[in-house]
Image (cartoon, rainbow, N blue to C red; front, side):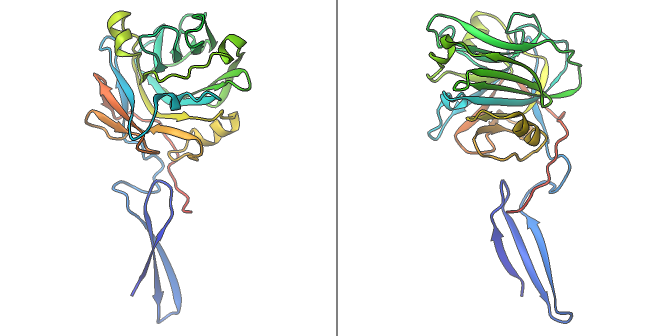
Length: 287
């Protein structure tokens, strides 16, 4: 009669079945994971969010179950990460991830053309409306169409510096001046993937991006370059400090769930699903 024991395993409930083969006096240990899809596959990403400029499409990140919008941009520092694949030319002032709503200069935006250089990959942080000032870190890149890239934006308020990475490579850094560090974004504001808020879309225009976006991660910690490099290609990163994680693997419907907890939901607003995904390492270690 087999003995069944439940193991603690990140993201999956696993069972180990130990079978004592009496005739040969050997112990055989078999592992089974209760997962509806393939286990130990090289890539278990199944879909991504698809955005088209002109549709005013977005995915809103909505808090629930005690989650708060400002947990996505911690006042001590935070990191945003995503994989993206452009389906058309870079558009100036287009959004990968953006925190913004009707109050002006209460913004944090990762995308293209949000600094001094048109179309440059950029990360912008505002002064919480104190004096209507912003600071950005940017880098002009030759981003190819139909190729997946990993982007990471790091805001280290306490260290007074911001960082921009592409495929784990540091592109540029920028000092955070006192008018930013003394006036950090603390209120709850809307955060969207692929565009700005409905107010901005209806009042100021479409800030959408022609792209597939996948594996969106919001950290409440200042991630180092090594941490970014060690986890960017993993389906199941070390969850320490991870506030919300959208794998976008639902593939249908209008809701995407955060993989790490139940504190945030992604609501698709005119956006669609794509079966295009980056190639990631999805092998799990049982613990």
